[in-house]
Image (cartoon, rainbow, N blue to C red):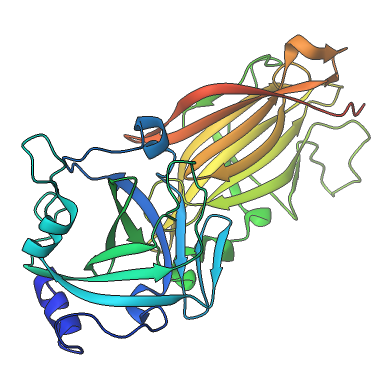
Amino acid sequence: MSKALYLMVVLSVGLLGTTPTQTIPKDLWGRWIVRRVLPATTISCWGEDEAKSLIGTEIEYSAKFFRWKEVDTNNPVAEVTVISAGQFHDDNSGQGANSSQVSFNQLGIKADKAIQVMIQHPPASIAGATSEIPGDSVLIKDKNTIVFSICNVYFEAKRIAAPTQSREIRMFDFRESVYPWDEPSGVPSMWRWMSTSSERGIRLNDGRYSFHESNPPQPEPEGAERIQLTSITYGDLNGDGKEEAAVALNYGSGGTANWDYVYIYSYQRNVLKLMARLESGSRADNGLVRVSIENGNLVLDFADPERRVGDCCSMGFIRSRFRWQKGRFVEVGPREHGDLKLEVH
């Protein structure tokens, strides 16, 4: 269905103008992710940093609530309006040569009319300069795209796929999976990205793999070289609205040294695909502390070697954020430092 035809179909259910206040219309129900800033010629109370902070955040609508991040509006009341391109321009643009100018064309809306939904809520304090909440007043561009503004900066958000599609990867059993494997060349002291191709593969059994093999099978000797699955973290990393999985495997060398490998997988067309893999340092020397996915970024915490307490431990961590760009993970933003409770292993 074309964007113009979609808008015509939606408009056919109501009359031109404003409808009485109502709950949020079904066309908006679901989760949306803020994708990009749109190139409108406006004078804004926000700078570039504030605008960028919205990218990757989620908005959720239902009949019972409206949510952006942790900001909730319960039992929301909405006003639905059919607005023309000319009226939108006049309502949101100034009269002078140097005034703000914004149009449907700048926002990528090709139709001459669009549905505008305005949600009532108490004044919010998102960044101090505005009482707006991202997504409280939107133009429905098409069934999977909405446009909204904050502080006169315009953003585009995309619908997140339904949970049955977006979370398909969770059905995969990573505890019984085969992972690419290369023999370590030594004890690492720094994290590094590795090639996705490998010398061979190893298959986990109930989340474990032992390099001690015997026939017939014998109990694994104490201190044997082994691999253990330690965590699986889910979240959208490539912007397709579907979850990826970051799987952390801990490698024990058979001695005191141990380190981790993080495998990042996507699930497309019923096929599991390795996007990237990373090797951490060992223990206090940039050992892996934590894996998380936040706002489309892979977030990895590593032990801070500058705050080490012997070879085993560190009193601090270094946080690095990575974004999927052009087929690889690229570190973004400054590194952060934090404290860790001392745990001796």
